[in-house]
Length: 267
Image (cartoon, rainbow, N blue to C red):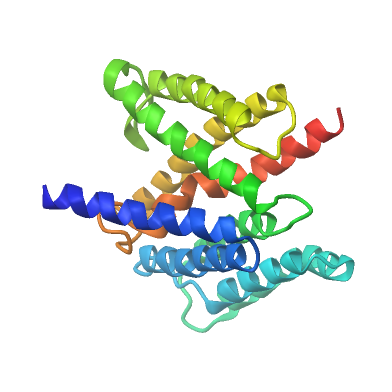
């Protein structure tokens, strides 16, 4: 019972912080994304510390990319884009030529993963020309709906494993139930909440994209944890694990939603 109460309280604190900081908009939403990046980097680093050395260049790269895109000046955006090959070269030099570095190629790959895994979605999320805070909040609500409905559907009627080697409890039925019921939730959001998406078909499409990539993000992080040999990415949220355990879906949904919204804007 105590564990359940702890889990519920930490979940409420997390949801309250996300909703509150996004509602207050900038600069508070950027503080939220900055915390995601900072805590996520150190969790990832801790997960793989026994296998590979992840250098500080990765954290500096995450900060640099996010700052360039959040500034939203044309010169800064160009610099941020050119920063990508510079990051690759800097990490390559650091891993390959550092004295005593073992498994340099694997370590380089791990450092590149954490850099772009965090930097790309968080830099996009804080860019007003792509997302505003109300749209980011809508994505979080859709992600939470999908997680809840997929879990409940899987528990009730789940029979067919989806990807057993990564997540034994996920089922095809849970995936389909999550997509369907998240679509229903999106309909009520569209009717009763002032969402930035202006037509129901676009909102329905966003719900489908969110459900699919939310699941992929969850599976990807499960794969990372299995590779690192850990159950949770951290313990900052009692009963829920680490911050990466909470934002794994968000990190995949944001780039997918950005591409989707760009494409539908052309229609």
